[in-house]
Structure formats: structure tokens, C-alpha cells
Image 1: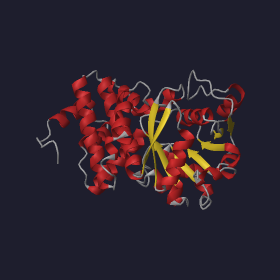
Image 2: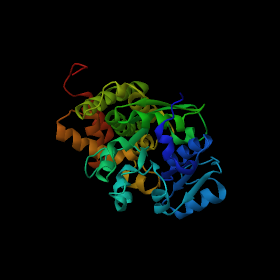
Image 3: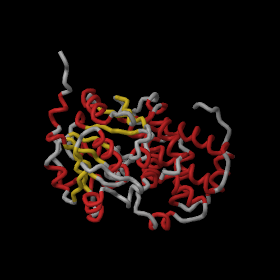
Length: 343
């Protein structure tokens, strides 16, 4: 007899809510509506809500993309939260708790699919832990992550990602509703590794951008990505991740694309710093959030707390927050005491 995934019954009226109308939230809305779902997307900015509903575009965050007509926007967060059980969380990490705190204790029957990447700076917590604090049962949380720039996903360029949850049926449900000819979803049960891989790679992407801004070579970038992955592994495994996860889409795949792509906001921040701009001026000039900046501070604090050696992330922290000259940082890294490659 045909087995029906029990999660299908929780999608009422074929509608899924997305909280957060930035580039990634809008791109994921495009995937779901391509698959026949209706999407209600909450936008913080009233002008974004108007533009999506009136013109089916979101030029502030996703240029040159026509959004599907069955994507609807609202400025009323209660409308998105109260009327939907399946909610995709596209809120930048540092704003999740603040945005949703009024619903604390009301998450018991909700199912969250998180698509943001980061570590909360104030608590040093992963995003799943933030939702646990808000009252979400662990089995009702999933993360969708991997090498997936919004600009390409929204234009239906072939992309592969990974979904992870403690509930295998929930993961299967996510694969079913998202997968199509252009968007392939693998499954995992290592939520810790998927969350940390996606968060920590943004720091290495900032460092990669610094290399680009300094106009250094391919050798330098290859060294950075390889040794950066070693640091991601070191901290993630200490915090309970499966090392295999970090060799997959949530780790190496996401690290590669974020360090090399013109679409990467984190890489772009690093590039501008490498060209001599200050972090303060860069952040003033854009409405887009580069999650890696706050994650750098959180990862540095975690490395200190757990006594994990992370020299690249340490130097990136000093460049961003202590005004260390990037060329000096590179020299300090290159002249460290010689070591075995694996330790």
C-alpha cells in the first residue's frame, strides 16, 4: 500500500509561510511556488511587501528576477505565524530571537525549516538552540543548507542542498516539497554539523575576499580554503558534529562556493576590507546582511571557550574588530611554528 508522509497533513490549504523576504527567502519562495505551493512571505519593510504584491519583484534584495504570481507578501507577522504550521525561517541569525520572542511558548505545534546560517553572538548558540529556547520541540526543527546562492536558485540554475532534522520523516517531507528538476535535496541527521558548516564557512569567505582585495594568488586562496576547512572541522567536531558532514554539501560544498562566488556577500565584505575600506563604512553602505561578521566574533569566543586552535578565524577576528592590517595577519599566519598537517 502507498505510504503517505504524515507531514503532508500539516500543510493547510497548500500554503507555506516564509518569515524573512531577503534574497534567500525570496529565492526559496520561488522554488516552492514552482512546485505548486502557495507562499505567504513576511517582509519587515513595507515597501518590499508592496513591491512583491504589486510587481512580483523584490529589487532591493533580488535584482532582475520575476517572482511567481502565487507568492504573496504581508507586513503582518501574526498573519504568517498564526495561520501556518510549516514556517520557513529566513531571518538573519542575530535577529531571530528578537523577531520571534513574542511567540515564545507558542511553537509547540509549529514546524520550522531554517534557511539562515550563523551563530548567535550574544549566547554562542546554534539556530536550533534558539528555537528550542522559544519552545520548539527538537523533532520539529530542520535546517536546509548547502552551496546555494539565492541569485542562481531564483533563476533555476541547478543546485543541490542538504536537509537535516532529528525526525527522518520530517526530512523526507522537506525533500518532497522542495525537490524539482533544478533543486535537489539530500538528507542528513547531523543537524549540528549542517548548522556549523554553514555558519563557519562565512568567516573563511570573508578571509577569502580579503585575499581577493589584496590581489593575491590562487595558491594563497587554496591554502586558505584547505586550512580554513581544517578549522571548521576542529571546532565542529568538538561541538558534536559528524566529520563526514563537513566533507559534504554543508561543509566543503558551501565553503567552496562562498569563497569563490561573485554573489557571496561575505566574500565581498572581505574584498572591500582588502582594498582598504573599514568594516563600519562597508556595513553602512548596504542593506544586505553578511552573517559572517557576527559569526566571526561568536566563533572566536567559542574557540577560546573550548580551547580549539583556529588561527585563521582568530586573525580574521583581529582584522574585523581590532584593526589588524591584513598583510600583517597573513605574515603572522605564514610564520607560525611549523606543524604536522594533521593534528
